[in-house]
Length: 441
Image 1 (cartoon, rainbow, N blue to C red):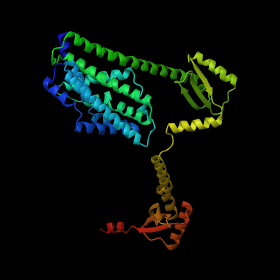
Image 2 (cartoon, rainbow, N blue to C red; image 1 turned 180 degrees about the vertical axis):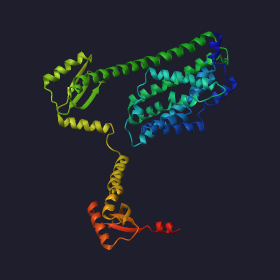
Image 3 (cartoon, rainbow, N blue to C red; image 1 turned 90 degrees about the horizontal axis):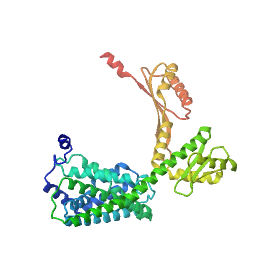
Image 4 (cartoon, rainbow, N blue to C red; image 1 turned 30 degrees about the vertical axis):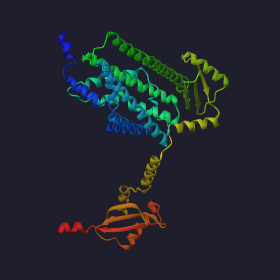
């Protein structure tokens, strides 16, 4: 038993406690460089959320100094250093306000106001976010108290994800969506509180010496306050997680219903939309060619109960004008239209395809007609580029050991014009004299 306890003992590899506390205190303050780093990290994270780039968001989380005051608050509670606790909370408030101001200004000025998936992911926290924050916080504090800090610190910065919720809250303020603002702020609060609680637990487990002796009543007050915070944050998080679970189960049932009743019967679905948030829930479908009578629609609505899809109305869209508009809106919302970059790539691909001449296929034909020719190179070349008289002409360079007669050149030009379907053509002859000179040597 002692061997097992020794194996999981956190006191092994522990750093000097005075040094740990010194590092914690030094990372609390948001003055000078720390404030500038925070503001820059917020801008980077906001850009990442704005363009839906996970890599950029991760980079912002790595350079963010937000963990400092949260860990400081946990240490302050753990050693009953209320001065450290007040200082940490004050600096956390400063950091939060600065972050909200910077992100709100960015999103207000940004021309792109579309709600990306990375932004949406931070607006509805649940119990899993609590688990991530708590266990991420545990790892972070354990790493801070080690002599060898190792690799966990960057991982904790990514896992606990303090920056994106703050930026999303700023986005909510910028576009006037207070549901986004409150949801993101709630996620940020969850992260802060549970990282702090994880820190408190590790500090207590490692038995850091309290700064001053606190009576039993005061200790109980601290515990009661933390318990209240945990319950206050866990109840809505559990509710959101339950709603998320319900929605996923509902979507599974709907997909099963659609597959059995339509897809497996060879019907092509042109449009599908599930509205879970409305009451009653709605399933909207449209088909490529099948038309349903009111009786058939009523029967399908009755079948929903067989699939345990309760409180739902099935609507089959058969009005083509409105349907076309909705499909176009759906395509637009899913960013199916090509952006400028895609258009440019498509244009360049087309130009390359048009300009390509397959020399390898033409050479065998030419050798049959003109055995003197040993090799060719044909490509389209633009003459007088960037002028009004610009023209693109096929240019051919052929290699021969002996000069072609004028009559053969004319025949070659006429044949190639017909082959390439071109009215103009440039032909150049290259004699392979260098091979002869090599043989003489």
